[in-house]
Image (cartoon, rainbow over all chains, first blue to last red; front, side, top):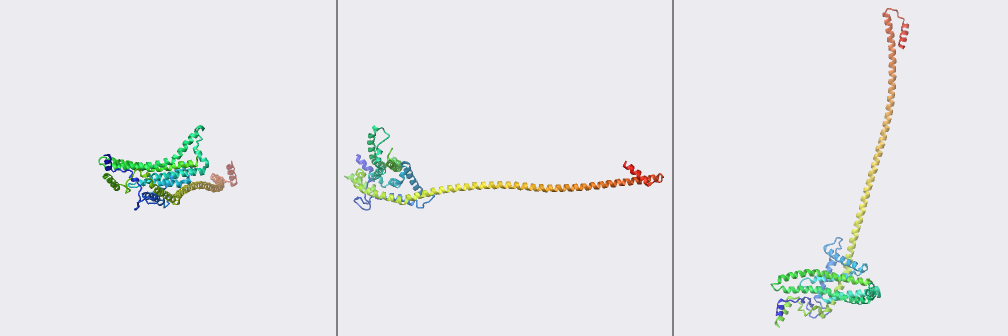
Length: 248
Length: 183
């Protein structure tokens, strides 16, 4: 009976995350053009529209689009300066790339019937691993073995330091996991919940409530889309600061 | 089963055209290579677009704006300074003009005073000359009057003497009158 009801309700919250080939292809090879390709391409186009076309007049008194582009620039630039310090500024393009990609992917994913690329662990894991590897390599290149001082809390009593070092090492290696799962979990959960409510909207009795819930969830998802991009970026800055200045 | 088939058909119609998800599509590792490849392509493209075009451009615009604002502020400061200087020089000119005017007034006054003094001196001299002249003519007149009185008195005395019937000795009468007049 439950299965019958479910089939009548048509709730398939995970269908929206399926990766499928486009333009007639049937198999998914690594080079196949899929919906992932399409929506990542749209993110690129969006970023070009905002950051390149929006600023093409290089106006001293900016147009609206140029203002937004400058706002994004200033937002990330100031974040790096505040969190990482002035020597983090040379990694600005790298962090800006991550921020813009996540922001655009999140918001494009909010378009009905679209595909949210950041709802896939493969994508966020690579983003997080890129940050993790970059930061780790950078830490050793900049500080040599002194980078290990990050794990040796010299402020703690000597007896506690080995214990703390173990904890610090574990937390260091958990970073990419939490970094990626946080983003993917937020985006995926929000989209799935909206889909579930959408399924319930088929029942006349609960549909008003369901539509209200979808609206509320959508509003929250708009917030989450930005906040998660912000969180991902600021954590990147924090990790970068640890790499540049490992001593507490 | 019939229900399953219907479900599938409905999903195909209502979904994203991607068929039905089996479990979590996120954990379908057969799509990972594809996703990772396109992600890397996307990130590289975004990075190139940002570093080659967007970020230098926006940075330049922001720097230019900052420069413009700084320049404008500096220019405003300069103009303000100029205005203050202009006011100062105006005040200075005003003070100078006042001093000049006072000087001119003083000079004019001194000139006038000098002229006046000269005129007064001349007038005094003239007055003195005139007074001396008058004095002279008055004394002349007085002298003339004394003379006339003497003559009249002598004549009168002679006449009176003649009228009384005496033969008047002219010389004696004159001497008598003169003596009388002197006394």
